[in-house]
Amino acid sequence: MLWADRSVDERNAIGMSFNNRLQTVIARYFGPAVVFVLFLLAWYALAYGLENNFSPASNTPMIIPPPHRLFEDIHGIVRTKIVIAFWISLKTSLVGLTLSICLGLIAGVLMAQAKWLERSLWPYLIALQVTPIIAIVPLMIKLVGSNFAARVLVTVIISLFPIVSNTLFGIQSTPKNMHDLFTLHKSNRVTRLLKLQLPAASPAIFSGLRISAGLAVIGAIVGDFFFAKGDPGLGKLITQFFLNSQAGPMFVTALSATLLGLMLFIAFGLLNKWVVGRWYEGSISQ
Image 1 (cartoon, rainbow, N blue to C red):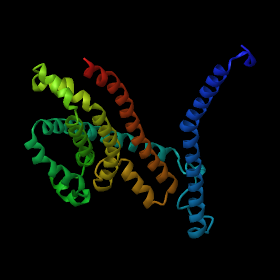
Image 2 (cartoon, one colour; image 1 turned 180 degrees about the horizontal axis):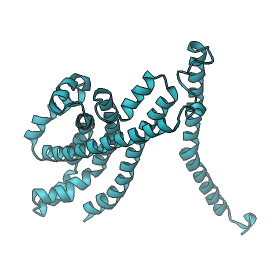
Image 3 (cartoon, one colour; image 1 turned 90 degrees about the horizontal axis):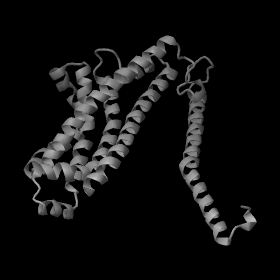
Image 4 (tube, rainbow, N blue to C red; image 1 turned 45 degrees about the horizontal axis):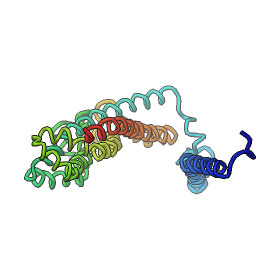
């Protein structure tokens, strides 16, 4: 149908639809693209600004390499080291995060079911969250040594609290009228937990999981700095490149750590959509 043959209402509807699509494209792509370009410009400005101020000699390594020079010093041996370190940090993050999920969900559920347990454990969980890792490093070395287990323990300590707090908050935020409905049907505590409280708390729980996924990577990197025995992860490799004045490999390793964190965050985001979409609405409506 030609544009001239359409009615005024059809033209307005088409115009509104086009405007909505245009706004969606701008919101989804234009803003992030602009921020990314500004980030690259700031990176170049900082790299060459420091080069001019502190490294005037042409043969002096740059303090911060610009993006197009990141991979100049990445040869076969360095690339292999980064890949191995990435795998070790991934393994540390996943093991620590898995333990945090198990402990955090159990603790959150138990604390939500027993007020006295919440009052007993909550202050110590807060203390564990705010205690600097470096303050308990000597104790950890005495208990588990300076090895892979110590790195996993650091990961658990750093990533545990968001899972516990979000699980507890989600369960306690279950609507009262839904509790009244389950009470009317004389549901026991287990049925109430499985059919009502956990489905209702699933959005909060997965928010905690996504936060902890990023913190688990931080824990794996921090653990590398303090516990050096065994094969080096990304954190230890960053330190080695820094001490050897290898700026390019150091930044590539740091970007690899960022990529690892994004991978875990996105994975739990997708899992959140799948579980919440299939479980949350369906379970409550049954």
